[in-house]
Image (cartoon, rainbow, N blue to C red; front, side, top):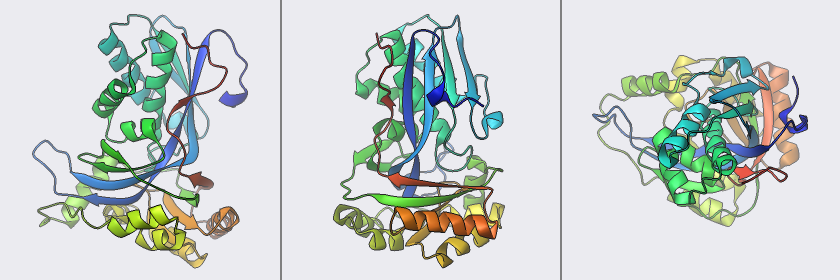
Length: 314
């Protein structure tokens, strides 16, 4: 398939790139009456990207290319389409737009690829249609679309509360290098949360105070300390639904990772390396052991959704 980044220009277009994320910590409270779980999380945006190109069209439509593109819905279930429709409704725009997604973030892998598409689509449509909404309004729309979407607009490192959509920027020093073990068969986020509820029937509150040391490690740029403090309340639920994750986690640990954690609702396994080269070594170990369908390496933190230079912005 043609790489979107190398695709020829065919008319006025806006290109936006948005990163994936890893949850350095994810703490989950009991299910509320509205079906949502309160969370306390620390996000880091990483250099695995979704690229979105907005071009003229009669209606709002979407297409996809890249790894696992065949798994991406191209109807109104697609978060990028929903983002475009939400922006149009907010601003009174009646124009159409075609959104082409080039996938780089694993699909249903716990790294928020769909949310990155939504964040990129919001920014792309805002620039393409010339609606010029302030960032604060884009964040309001993002929060309506999904808990992770506001963070993918923001990027870098942030503390999330509520459903994860209430964000506070976190200080972070240095660069962190990751290896990701990816599986072709994703995990349903609702299914993982359902399993979490089954495993924790007596949980009556959110334990939100456990990340003070982790935030200190980020401020100090202390990768070994950060690795030791990686945490995910959903990890046991993900492992129950995908037991082979135990082996993936073990191989990464045996390769000397500073810390290993299931990313978000899984099944992607995130392993923190001592350096860029060490992340490559961990990725090679996962490949050699056959415990991942593919591997990625990335660094963080990185910025959130950004218009790519050369775009035709109104």
